[in-house]
Length: 167
Ligand code: 4NP
Image (tube, rainbow, N blue to C red; front, side, top):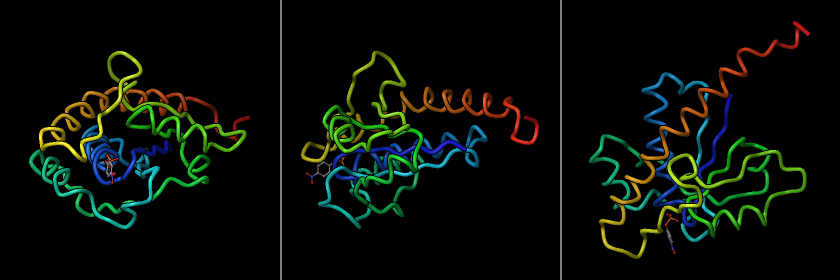
């Protein structure tokens, strides 16, 4: 089992979109049972809210339903509960690194490092026009396949390792 947490600022635009896109692709790849997904925000302003209507609409137009997701804030136990904590931008990655407990084994990084040149951020669309949401969707789609390929390889390694009983 692989556990992935997507992290943005408010957990109402970018990270729920990432959760929805990657969930749909995992289902298409037959890996939905092997990978657990969640999303959260480093800020707490929108805790308890559904995704922004503009993010919901962008996803719905592409056949992905994120309406039932509910915003929550990043917490210290997430660093133990997930294998990958993937930030949407450099500010949120820096926040995660400051908050990570000593001995944290999880991979902390940028989602877009799974596609194209490293170091790219998904821009915050909250205060911008609607096309910011289309851009968010397109950028996350670019990274989704690379992330799923990483999951597939990791699951193959896990399956080929001998179980406890064989050692
Ligand atoms: P998100 O977008 O981090 O992609 O969910 C934002 C949502 C809300 C705010 C900022 C960014 N805000 O300032 O309330």
